[in-house]
Length: 130
Image 1 (tube, one colour):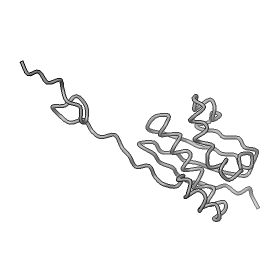
Image 2 (cartoon, helix red, strand yellow; image 1 turned 180 degrees about the vertical axis):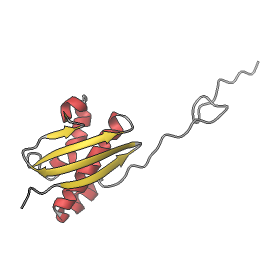
Image 3 (cartoon, one colour; image 1 turned 90 degrees about the vertical axis):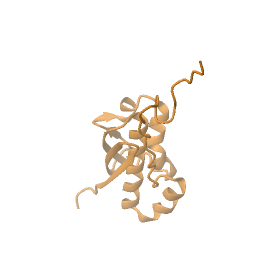
Image 4 (spheres, one colour; image 1 turned 60 degrees about the vertical axis):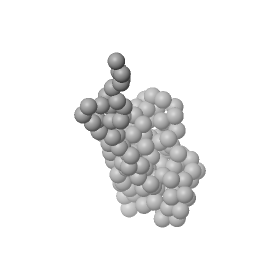
């Protein structure tokens, strides 16, 4: 039997991540770069590794992800969700722990659009009485 590969999609804000998970040594590639190179901040790298650390499977899988749209934070959250979904495909018993940790819930918050007559979505121009 060929090596098992699992595929899942993760989304956050306007970012989309396609994630492939296969048994391996713990190497994580995002857009063909190492996770620490792609996400230059340590906090974003920690966000990506959270589902693996929860299940004590950091060095059990190789992960390949492609992300597009949004910024660093949104892409990290999208990759995290994709990894969590792949881990469920690998073993259905992981679902309860990942659900309780909140890794399967889609964070659907979007930026509110700018309105006319305002500086931003809600901020107003400075009011002058005189």
